[in-house]
Length: 90
Image (tube, rainbow, N blue to C red):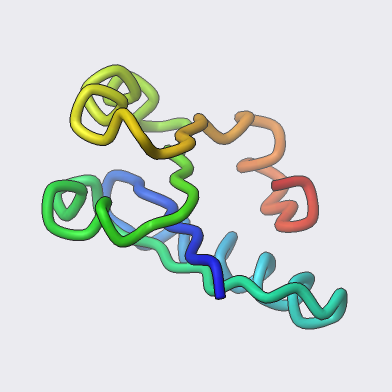
């Protein structure tokens, strides 16, 4: 099972996106777990993720996260996808 972690400012609005992603993953039968965490937890939890997404409101943290976890695939969520809460697009 692969783990997708989405880091954002507080972990609140992103939890809505996570729920949308979980529904899509379940419908399609993918073998992923998806979690939302505040960026303050990146040092503690980032090492356990297989894929990391950074919410658009904290995209300024992208380079710091890439330096911290250079071996991890890390992307910023497209603002349109985030605004639409489109879990299928990630």
